[in-house]
Image (cartoon, rainbow, N blue to C red; front, side):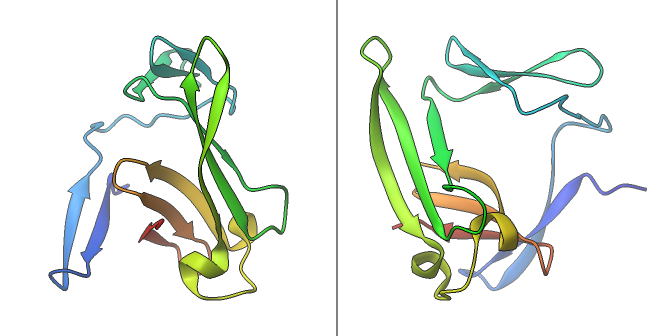
Length: 137
């Protein structure tokens, strides 16, 4: 049986907890990475020809890892939709986050998400298959 949750370690308490996805037993597979941003929501087309809408709370973010083998990551936010004004929120390196100089975001880590209000970034550490959450600042 497929586990529909994730085990989370809290460095604050030193304990592990298990959280379910909340999406029930359905698997959601997105057709490709093309996305439409409309009315503050990201819209994906699933393999079942349904539209998956994800609320971004009215903000559009762009994350750039600058090509294969890079250790740099930039996070941009679209502040002014009418004037196309993108603001650089973060410009960080793998060595700043993880303390190692030979890491690459696309080879060693897979970016899952950012939480810009809490300055958190979520990765999968590929060699260990761990989810890593770290403070951006």
